[in-house]
Amino acid sequence: MKESESGEGYVNQPEFTVPPGATEVRQSKWAWLWSGIPWVAVTILFGVQDPQLALLPLGLGIAVTIPRYFAWRKTAYYITADTVIFQRGTLGKPQLYTLPAEGFQRIVERPGLFGKHLGYHAIDIRMRETGRVSLSYVPAEARMASRLISLRDRHSVYDEDQEERELEFIAS
Image (cartoon, rainbow, N blue to C red; front, side, top):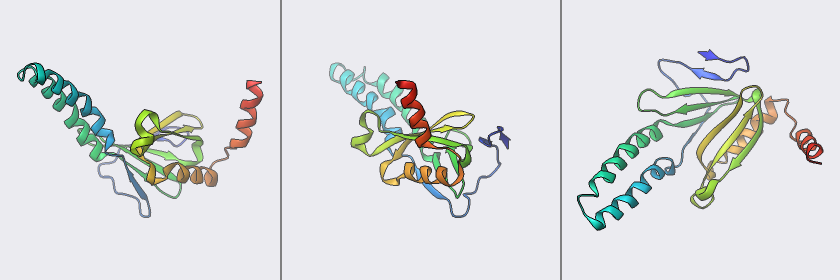
């Protein structure tokens, strides 16, 4: 396992097994559908003019959407008692990243342009020493942000109220 000083790192395991008691959260289906929707529109637009012209955007759309679909199927977030394991899907073997709760600082939900209406959002986690991690297309019904905030409050020394006061001071 390759790991940074803060404990966050890429887990290089031959076989990953879900830790006992972990909660699994899968990405919204919109994670892969959004990559294909523009190609459907372009295919229809070209197909109206000449059906043979529709073959190019149709082929490109398939070339973009199919790999994204397989990556989506392998992507998951596992919440344990003190860690979040981010399994990032790829065409090959999924990549696993551990995010220890003691490194969590600010946790923010971002619904994006369509996410609020389609039931998903991104969750940004600012880690103590390694920057920001973004968990995308998280279904809103998973209530993952509140779970992560609860994890942070149990395991991290981060004080959100103190940070808010400091930001107000800087802004004034």
